[in-house]
Image 1 (tube, rainbow, N blue to C red):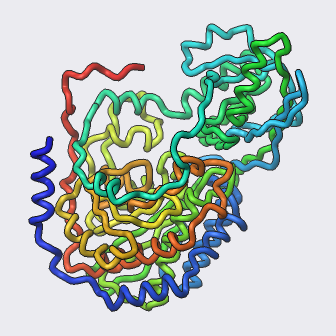
Image 2 (cartoon, rainbow, N blue to C red; image 1 turned 180 degrees about the vertical axis):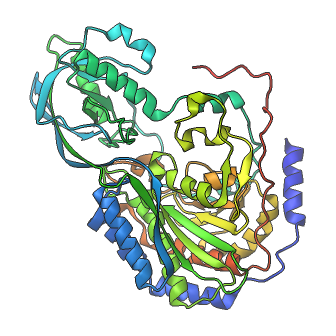
Amino acid sequence: MQRLLAAVAAICIAAPAAAQSVDRAAINGIIDQGLNHSEVMPTAAHLTDRIGGRMTNSPQMREAERWTQQRFRDWGLSNVRAEPFEFGRGWSIVRSSARMTAPRTMDLRGIPVAWTPSTNGVVSGEVVVAPITSPGQFDAWRGKLRGKIVMITRPDTGGEPTEPAFRRWTDEELEERAGYVLPQNNPAAVERAMRSGRADFALRLDAFLAEEGAVAWVRKSIREGGLLHGEGYTYHVGQTPRVPGMELAAEDYRRLARLTLTDTPPTLELMSEVRFHDDDVNAYNVLADIPGTDRSGEYVMAGAHLDSWVASDGAVDNAAGSAVVMEAARILKAMNVRPKRTIRFALWSGEEQGILGSLAYVDRHLATRAPLSDPAFANAPNSQTWRARWPIQPRAGYRDLVAYFNLDNGSGKIRGINAEGNIAAVPMFEQWLEPFVSMGASTVSLRTSGGTDHVYMQTVGVPGYQFIQDPLDYGSRLHHTSIDSYDHLRPDDLRQAAVVLASVLLSAANSDEPLPRMPLPTRPNATDPYAPPPAD
């Protein structure tokens, strides 16, 4: 392994620098516009304080789609549009409450689970702890749940944090990220994931609870400290649950579970008023361009997801990235740049439900994948089967997109970029980031990164990259939680990120040669053909 890493490092060092230099005069203009005339924080404030949490297809998301398009037009961008893709029902919370009424009265911290129905007023009942994680456990609870509020999470003992919630990458940690990580291919794991969609079990559990006469169900938050999330995935038309669901703070949930073991079992009152929005089942990606003057048809692209969950205002996830992408567009347009390639800006929808918006863009404009022959998957969502379908079938616009840059790691400043194993791209990235070493952006990592909107581009061989950002408190307490508000955004970090993004986009748009591409992916062999299948 050490010899392999040394060889990779040697290739990167020996690779020739890009043929053209960075336009430092233009970068001076970007720095001036982005640091002295920034509008990134007013943009972020409007998305968070004014609009709030932007659940896909909710009224708040519709407002965000309208407002962001208008801002792009106000700044003078071209071809501003909202591109549709099929999604499902909209959903929003009107109000909710949770209260323990015995053995004492106490307000609890709770939130309706997304895309579950209203309680239709206040419902009450005794609780029963019935941890159910698979259909095989249904029989054990038959005849025991009528009139009950069912606690479906297995209680645990909790724990206190052992590391600081807020941190920045150290130089040593960034250096460790530079190593090449060997890919691991497990066809059995891919097939298992394809057969276990997140919404499938939720609907089967709902059907069981409804049949058994349960009043409602509650689950435990996955984080401590009173934080709530409320994620849910039953958004498809015709697949809405019948039984109301709520998430309770971990501490409140455990208290209830402990009380069920005493001679005074608890009772709850729940109230959930939600609304479904069915006027338009399409979700929309917002796109806008700065037209190129040369390289007919080629473009570079920056994107972030505009949608969020609704436990709070979706500030670090991902109004921060959206505001930086919009600010980069504003900066470049204010400078009246005339790039060789078109620069496109994307605000994706449906990321939180499975990276759906960027997948729709890939499928429509870049490449698709052959259908599966198994009829069991004929109606399965595209995202559920995408990685298992071979071969990849490039579309006419496959090579037009020469580089995509994504921002979706919170409010931290940019520290570098993940090169996604593309050794040939490393020298160009190093050259484009060199002017920002003093601002902390210098690391070019060969690691791959996942879970956001560049992923499906990478799966079809399109150069899509995610920036490295300081973690701050993104993962420790903000990601998807009830405190993800404007207060946790870092203005200096976001100004730096917008400047770096604008500069990288301009360098990529004006580069004499596009970023080197990886080979078109083909079906990989199993890394370990003798490994046992994954456990159920």
